[in-house]
Amino acid sequence: MILTTNPAPPRRLRGHGKKRRRRSFARRLKRTTLVFRFMAALVGLFIRLAHGIGRSRAEKVFRYLFRFLGPMLSEHRTAARNIAGAFPDKSEEEHRRILRGCWENVALVFTEFVFLEELAAEFDPQRPDAGKVTVEGAEQFAKLRDDDKPAVIFSAHLANWEILGVVAAKYGLDLVIPYHAPANIYVADDVLERRSALMGRLVRDRRGAAFEIAAAMDGGAHLGLLVDQRLNRALSLPFLGRPAWTNPLAAKLARQFDCPVHGARAIRLPGGRLHLELTPEIAMPRDDDGLIDVGAAMTRINEIVAQWVREYPEQWLWLHDRWLLHK
Image 1: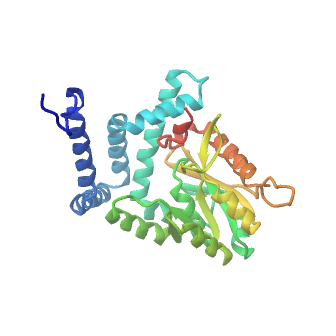
Image 2: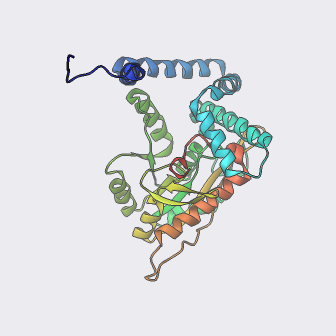
Image 3: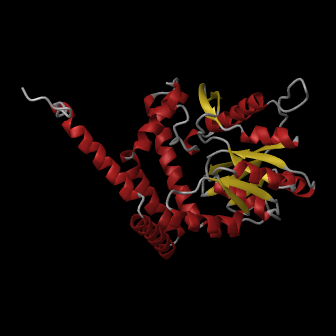
């Protein structure tokens, strides 16, 4: 008998290492400069083509693409699972209708991002109830702008969430917005340039971002934050009937500066219209010391966002897996 210290792996495992190596190679390949540049060029080509055919035709093209490609993506399965979990009393047909509406909204958001400058030009802050973009609560924007105090404005991935920052900037509101940059640095630079020109101060979501945001708020800036994104190792709080990882930053900064908290949402209406709502100040729960209770405040914020989603479920971005670790 010949003994060896490196016996051959069992037959059923021999292909496992090759598969892992192939996946690892594919993952590294996707992050190479060459691939990043190619994808950035492809995105740029799509944007130029969209501008070439015009907004109306581009919208039809993107609707067709997302309607066709969406169901092929893993995010489609994630969204279907999320919708079923959030609305167990609805029928499967209703679940499918919401899912179709979700992809429809993604297509419209993509189109509107391409034509964001055009969309911004259509809004007149002197006539907030006219045009394709309308605003309810315009007086709140003016109040926040003129009170020389920081504030927290929370929002969610509903309808076109990008337009909220654009409208705030139109009212002259000093806004600081954390954002999650695309992995592709070339695409990220283009996104940052376009958004900064229309929305103001953007802070990339990375280590040290919270200190940068706090410094801006110390100078009177207003935090605009999407609170419906998953953040691992955050607070586990109820959202749409199930525990979800919840980013506590909005409540923490509201507690630190003892500042007002407002909600803002976009609603998509027929005829290609977008309606924005900025709420009056929302009373936050406080602890025995009179300070904002972070956990209770974020629970309250989750309740408000959940109500928004229930009103217009097809307009929310169901593609994020907020509840993965709670199954």
